[in-house]
Image (cartoon, helix red, strand yellow):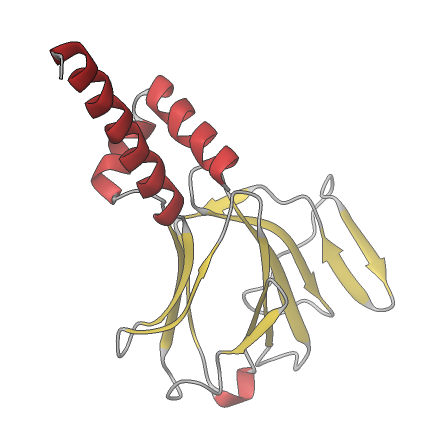
Length: 183
């Protein structure tokens, strides 16, 4: 076999390996009980996928709900908050905010905050629930009272390779394009 043909076969094999790695190493939403380091949920996600976290507010005794989205940087984008009354830890509605009040519920829309992870404490009385892709996870009932829950998005490649690719616009473009088309 000629060297040229061997080189082409090696290149094709390398590209197949890269495509396979990208296909199987997909971004995931990971929910962890930080007290015990136990994974409560691990599910594949794509950029733009949304999930909802809701709980019963300890002071107002009303349901609070937040809508979140997986960002292109594989962080958690805060998109919407819904609540029935103001209270500690809840946002203030300011002039210029995009919001609506309907059926006694305030819905603060089009938020643009981005977080590397969500972290909060749960108790049975807070009734924390996570809804994603048609599934509901009872966070308050599945762990010890007072546990800290962490929700994050793991990028599709090893963290070191992901940071390298993100620092180079051309590499980031190639990786994101491949992930979009392999999706």
